Image (cartoon, rainbow, N blue to C red; front, side, top):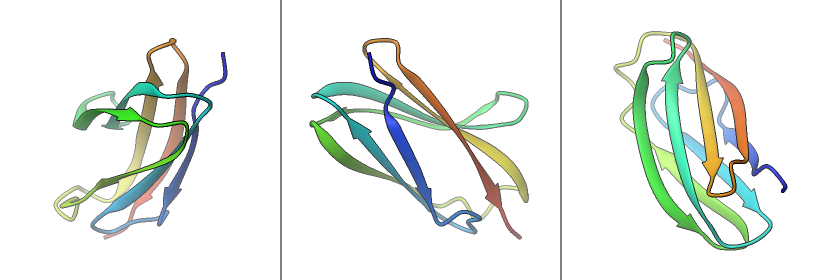
Length: 88
């Protein structure tokens, strides 16, 4: 099965990120934002239609500057990881 395609904008970010997820068919997605130690900062689950879905994580201005990971998992066990950088 295809892993979901993931694009993060803007990267680096300051207060919000938009996560574009491309899927081959309708599926349930879990999207997690974690720090490098694996601690979950935000997590949502949503149904994605075939094609592109856009998920926004906002209110991130309180996070310390540094590198974070966006992890996107689908029902079929496909997982995609993307790094993103938080600026001051």
